[in-house]
Length: 69
Image (cartoon, rainbow, N blue to C red):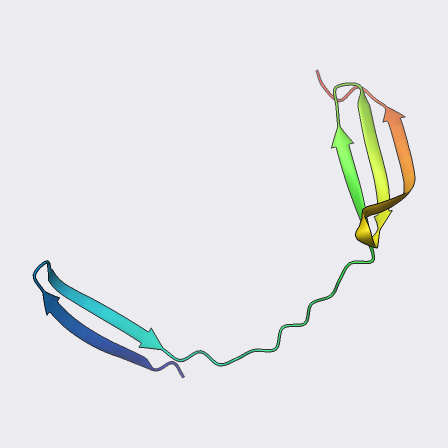
């Protein structure tokens, strides 16, 4: 159930409404990726790089392919 609190305030510019609510804290689990793949697409080339954590490349592939037209 969500509880909302309203506060109405009148100043020289007019009325303002403030709304607040309580949010339950949730547990967030962060999973750090161990590997990533980067892809670069050019007009005549597709490049793929596999990287381990801290952005160190371990595998690189260049594929000659027509990607436009």
